Length: 138
Image 1: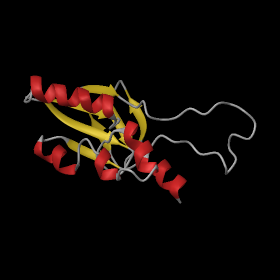
Image 2 (image 1 turned 60 degrees about the horizontal axis):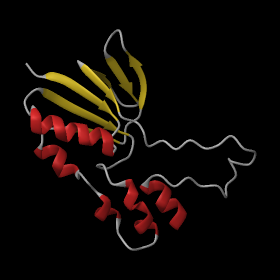
Image 3 (image 1 turned 180 degrees about the vertical axis):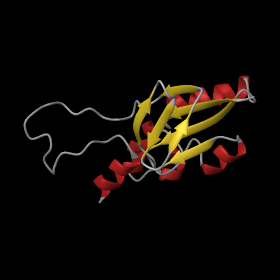
Image 4 (image 1 turned 90 degrees about the vertical axis):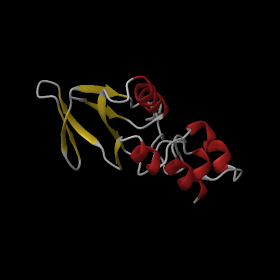
């Protein structure tokens, strides 16, 4: 019986782990990935050329929706994890509750802003995601 592997985070590091597991032990896990953003994972390093108009967002995609389907990975994109119950081995998202045998946190893309006066002003913008790029371009 395959173990249920739940990965919280759909960034480059977590997905590199998923790729490695699929290559080394393709039948060992039933993999579910939860990603807050509404699409497959992408190379954040390439966001600067997107902002400059040199590349499109599609040029940054590492795994599109079809990749997840081809590899039997369930992608729950556009969902946010609200609570993790370690004792019950459950995760509550804003849409559902999931059970797991193995849990991985791969949530490294959230920017941390310095605690300085005025940091929350409308003229201050983080630059970490494609949503940030779209907001800067608007």
